[in-house]
Length: 155
Image (spheres, rainbow, N blue to C red):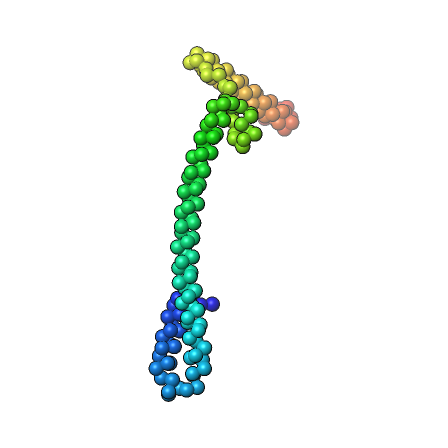
């Protein structure tokens, strides 16, 4: 498949048409194909200019779409703000309008003393868990030693 553009093909065909036309007396057997190439060139030029026109129209359409999106977003945001003002930002009634209510965290803010107490409890739990794990390891080791103990007096 050719990687050349349609416009490049048109330029080549036009050069061929013009150059063969100058020498048709020498090559009369090419007259039929020369004549067949002329309407193809004309239609090709029309299609090229139509394509350029359509590209310009597409750019205008895309520009208008971006403008419309910007305006629509602004109006939507105003409506959403008004509805949140009327019902409250965390009202479940906002769902009826396709808006997500704000989910507020109900977590209580702790004072420095409460934070210190919480951290102390977490540290105590971690220490107790580590101690329990160490005791469990010792028990497993003791049981293992008991099963492989040497008979008395062999040392």
